[in-house]
Length: 361
Image 1: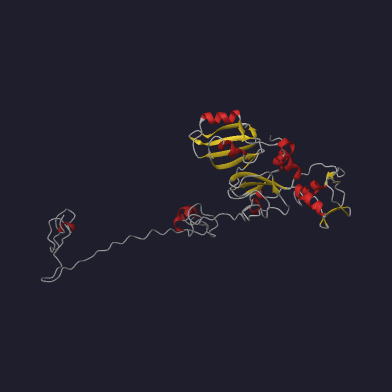
Image 2 (image 1 turned 120 degrees about the horizontal axis):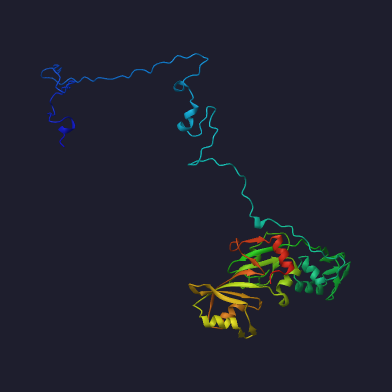
């Protein structure tokens, strides 16, 4: 298409334009172009007639087309608009207004739980070191050392003998400060790597107590031990009776570990573990052992009751494997579900009751 085609078909660029008549022929009206001058162009403007005015009386309603606010089409004109203002919230979109919900709620697992106390006869005698441990003063072993040092008194008299028993009604003092039994606290920690399971470390390494600092004013301590490089479930409490029950060889509880090895373990070695192995400190039998991932023979799940030192690592090392990662996923029925690595939560009252009843074997 040439530039001429943009203005009219077969018409020279400088030719005057003559409007056509109704019958399709050129208009016979003479051109208004002056001779030798520029073409004069007349522009016709068309106007539309004004809409017919509708008369109405005050008693009759105003027509919808002449109402100032037509509520029938307000939602189409603008979402949320009302004659009395923007009272309706916009639905969706950028800048949507949401109702204020206040401060975020506390993690339910970190809300302090008031546990029911076990029924204990106040006149029932109890060993002095156990009384100090249950009060959160120290462990039983440390209590024996304090008793020998002569810093513990009972009813105003210094006690230095081992095995002395007291009742809850006696006046027991430690460094001249009265000793009262604390409210029991139970904290579950998902232990991370590079933390030692101890209260104080002479080498100034990071301890699990750094992770639960501020959890409660009571003095809690770990139940059992996890190696520095072992992660997973760890219970901390000031309930000495329960801690002893969970760690004593007579009442050892079930533990489940997720083991990562440096190479694939054969089915033959898996069967050897099921049959039992002989280590330097005697025979060891596991409750169950299976592949944790059928597609990855480097991962093994093992269930065991023994509480010997580094027992899981030594089992695989005796067969020529190196444990690259060890995670305890269950202890006495307690799991680390919904607890991030390095975080903690209080046990529920139901969990504490199950532990006291010995339901988790």
